Structure formats: structure tokens, C-alpha cells
Length: 136
Length: 127
Image 1 (cartoon, rainbow over the protein chains, first blue to last red):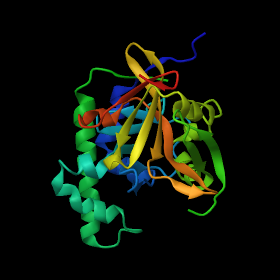
Image 2 (cartoon, helix red, strand yellow):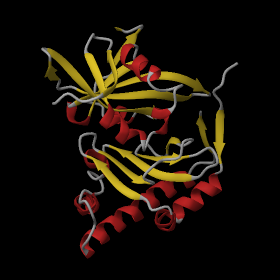
Image 3 (cartoon, rainbow over the protein chains, first blue to last red):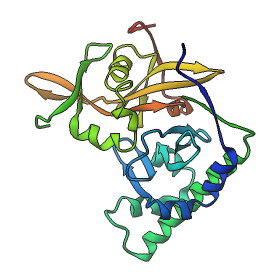
């Protein structure tokens, strides 16, 4: 018997979390982590839930999400080479999030601007889909 | 690179010696819990290196991404992806390639860049 299955995520639940990204991130203590060797950004929980997987939103942004549609993070491959390349206004965010700790007001604003853009990008793409379907 | 404890040591489809160091594995398993799933690791990672569906250069040509198509339902594909550093380090007179990360993914980001040439494989051989 094939153990793999198609899963339809709860679109409204996902949209609600992405729309309230700042609140969700604060509640779950999300952190930015940038891997320069992979040019990969993760913004999310320190440890992703055991049942979480990557769900591609729009060819750039992946969500770490669980089958119950709980979002635990955002994952972007080629963050500098691709995402920031066409979001030049967010360049200061890279410097801010690669610091050990964000201390000054300017870095804080840059990190917040990135969070707002990620939320808006993901929401727009997810909203345009009738269903959020993946396979597990 | 000094000798470090490794969690996986194998050869890829071209016979390259490949190592996933424990330290790097421990970093990536926090974000990719499938690395702690015995149904995925190490067998699916070893399989992706030995029998990729295709490989494609990544991140400024400094790495190679190995993809194996694990299954597909209604056109939605799930892959295992393994990212290998191209530049080897030498230990005991042997070239060793470092696994940078490995996880499941449903999307091939590198396909977005037309300059990156995909190499297809069948049974571990280039086609």
C-alpha cells in the first residue's frame, strides 16, 4: 500500500497566520538565521516541529508547516542572490540579521521591514491560490 | 579541515567520497526534522547521492545539488535534496566532499536560473 498521500492544508488558517506574522513570530520567538555558504534564510522557531515540512508558496518562499496547517517558519533559498536582488530596499536587513544580536534601532527597523515584506509576499501568493495542496 | 566526527560517509554516483559531519548535521536537523527520521536518514540521503534523478549547480557554482524524485501524486513531486560542496578537502591523501545540507523539498529552486545546466541520471549513470 502506498504510504504517501495528498494533503489539503487549511487555507484560511495559513492565511491568518501569515497575515499576523509579526504576532506569530513574537509569540513563538522566531529568529532569523542566515547561512552564507548556502545563501539560505530561515526565519522561524529554533527547532522546527517533528511533523513540519517545506511548502513552496511562490517559487521563492517556502513555509515550514505541519499537517494541521500550523506555520513554524519561513525558508528562502538564494536569499541574497535572488530575493534581495529584486528587493533592493531590503538589503540592510541582511547586515542586521547576520549580526549576533540586533541591537540598534536601524537594524531593528531593517529586520522588521523584511518581516513585513515576507508576510506581504507570502500572503499575496497564498491568497491567489484556491487550494493549498501538498504531498507527504 | 581537521578530522571531525561524521554521521554519514559514502560515495556519490561519480565515486566521490562524501561526508556529512556530525556538527553540520546537528545544525541542520533543527530546521529539517526529517534528518532525525530513520525512514529518511541516512538511506534516502545516501540514495540521492548514489542514484540522483538529476544534479544541478547551486549558489554561485560552489556547490552541487543532488535531487532524487521520491514520489509524485497528481503531478506534485517530493524530492530529496542533498547539497555538496564542490571544493574538496584532503584527508589521508583522499579528497573528501562535504555535505552542506540535506532535506525533503517540493520545488527545485535552481530551475529558476536558465544558466544552470541540469544533468540527468539513470541508475547512477549520466544520460
